[in-house]
Length: 173
Image 1 (spheres, rainbow, N blue to C red):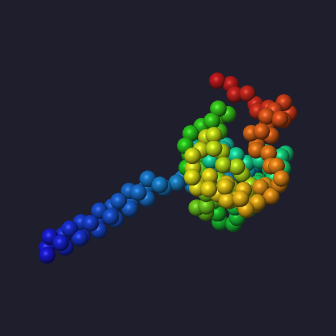
Image 2 (cartoon, rainbow, N blue to C red):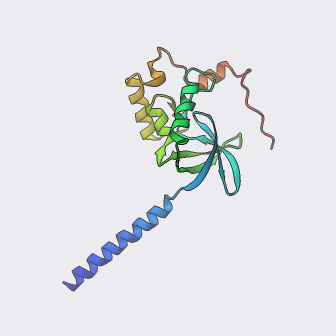
Image 3 (cartoon, one colour):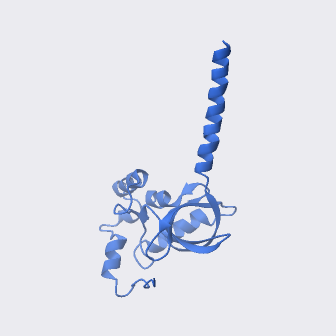
């Protein structure tokens, strides 16, 4: 019986210890939200300064594209509430020197949120996130947001058609 009690308490302590370690591994850093450029790009600030974050998993319509302003407004509504806590999980940097990662506003994944509202495409070329993929398919099937349109144009196709007008700034190395 002593062995069972000892094993039982050891199991509980191991479980609690694992929970603390797991919680630390998933702890996100808090940021200040400075600006929302469009549905998939924001400017954040932390103690080391400000930087642009490109949301991963999605591609939102460009600002001058159909649903571009709606996508941006939905992100503003999610992330600029009173007392909102902004966190992010940074995964890298892109060729334009933007940080890449997931943005969370009061623990709501902004990429998934916009996809569920039909205001962003799953960026299947760079993401294998099943939650975003499923949200994309559900929004499309239910004609939500931009999927209510007859032929919505993906942002990568829209940019290709408008590349002369909206050419990104070159990056110096």
